[in-house]
Length: 260
Image (cartoon, rainbow, N blue to C red; front, top):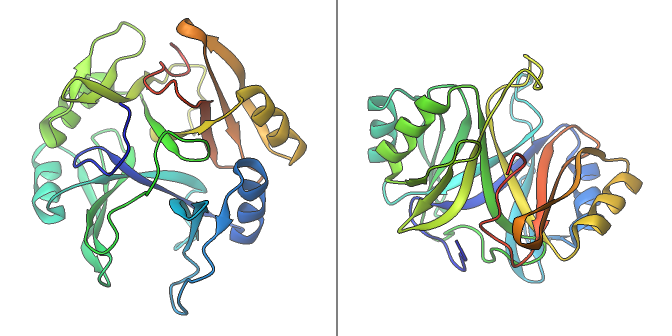
């Protein structure tokens, strides 16, 4: 899905909850060329938007509870956070934080699907979501890793109206026939302590160079640069604080994920 603006029921934002926001800002600035938004207002709890040029691309935040994992979380744009929260509960998911206003920026909720994969609902008002998609340094693909693929295939279409491009190894999520994400079934190669989760993929100009830079910045390479059909390349990395994320070659959105 060549997404150029926020689309209702599709990924619209991603944010990192981390143990060391300052170190994370340094890492991602060096890796993606991001810069921190220096117009943040006092009292925002350390929430920092990260920009590509002047365009909002993602956010880095402190953890808000000791048990919160160090991880990226994907946000989904919705027209009505309260109505969507009700649909999530009816479909067997859970609401971890009830819909809440975020000043005049919007209304949000934190939810989990049937298997426990966490995501954010975002009903935008003054702030709709990311200003840039599928360009170097921005979000372009979202992958669900789950141990309950059948449950996910029932849950997400029921709540968000997603289509599913069938595949034995890597079904892909879409709207109006355009794919924006995929699903990977977690098998015994994944340690039992790794929970189901959503993994954001960021577009980059050169996957191989990004992998090398991440390693030089003390990040870990979970999956090295890998070629896929059509000349596409992806990799999965982990930042120094422990948050995993993917990268892919800009201009190849719709590429299959790690098991493609």
